[in-house]
Length: 168
Image (cartoon, rainbow, N blue to C red; front, side, top):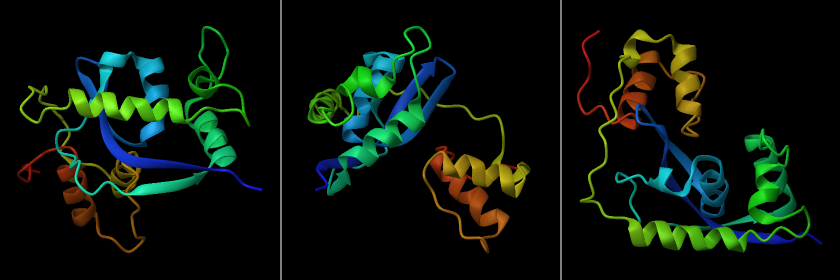
């Protein structure tokens, strides 16, 4: 019999370094893995993400464990899987521990808090269609095969926080 995990999906900012802040769509429990990997103060809610109407999602627990293992791999220092460090071993994983992290992020969340402006030097219109699609996939955006490059570039521009089209 399958066991399910109830979770929510949201968008966080992952600060890899001062010049590299990446928005990432994650499940709430996944925040714990990111905090282990990058440090607790390097993960925060994206101020452009609305906390209203966050739907609850059911995931198969064993599938989710494998997904997290495949996505994040192992700690290079200890060779222990990041998912195991965060939740324990398979079939005993305590994903609910990770749900506490979303409450903490929400309590820290303030739309007025200064968020460093992310400067992107590349105009999406100058990228190839394939490169644009690769960047969109980082945001879990599915791209129809018949979408044109300009539409894809505009979507990427919005995700990157570029409010106005950039000169070509």
